[in-house]
Structures are given as C-alpha cells and as structure tokens.
Image (cartoon, rainbow, N blue to C red; front, side):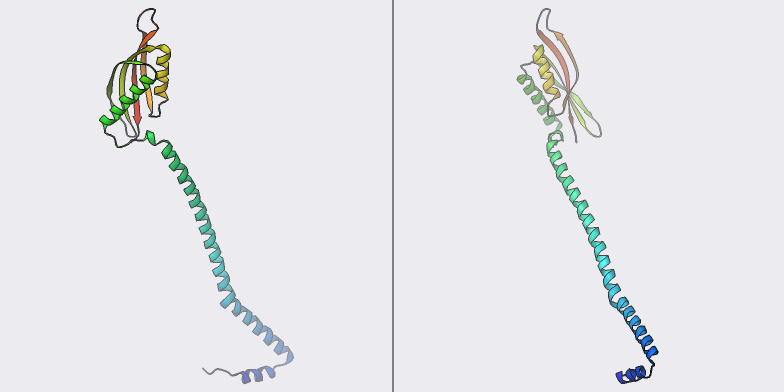
Length: 187
C-alpha cells in the first residue's frame, strides 16, 4: 500500500468547494476526536475508574481488618482476664490437691475448723470437668456464712452444691456443717 504524501492531500482539499471543505474539516475533527477518545481518553478513564474501585475495596478491607484487630485486642484482654478459669496442664491429682489447698486456705481465712475433708469424685462433660470435695466443719454461724461466701466468690469457679447445718449441741453457738463443694474446670 502506498502512503499518500502531503502534497496530494493539499491538492485534494484545494479542489473542494468552501462548503465541502467545512464538511471535510468537521468530519476530520469528529473522526480525530473519536479516535482520541477511543485510543487515549477511554483507556485512561477506565484505568482510573478500575484503580478507584480497587482503592475503595482495599479501604473497606483495611477497615474490616482494623475492626477485627480491635476485636482481637479486646478478646486477648478477656482471655487474660479469665485465664484462671481455663484448664492448665494439671493432672487430676494436682487439680484435686490444689482444690483441697484452696478450700483449706478459705477455711483458715474464715476461722473454720475443718473436721474432715476428702475428694468426692470427678464428673466430666464435653465442655467441662467438675471436681467434687466433701467436707465437715465446725464454726460460729457468722464464720460459717463468711466461709460459704468466700467459696462462692472464689476466682477458681467454686460452687457449693449442697450443705447441711445443724447446731453442735443444745444452747451452743457453734454449728456443724456438711458441705459439698465443686470446682468447674474448662478444658
């Protein structure tokens, strides 16, 4: 294909009438603008549009991730707050020994005389283990209520499952009590 030179183009344009030249220039301008739009402006505009959409997607992903990170910090602080309730890698014997020592410390703190204290077994479920202790004790009624309060409010998840209180003798201010205490451990 032979490329037309510029002199041929000028000769073609000079042969046109004034009205044909105006139409030719308008058509050439329209074609030039269309080519400019299709070859340069539209690709740049679509690229900018796709980059803006990608930026918005990444911004929303970053916002979600920041929200998750803020939740992660809150959850981590909650885990630390309740770590004492979670099971450490203690064996059953170590757990029972620790429980007996905890009850003995609470009894000494409340001025309770422990007559008898022994493990009463272990009940396991899918989500927890319950270590049972049965104990017999003697104390003044206010000391006994203080002891029971300390057991229920212990940070080791201790609960009193059953208890029986009776006076030691007639006209005595000392009460005897039989208590069943359970410790709940989450695996």
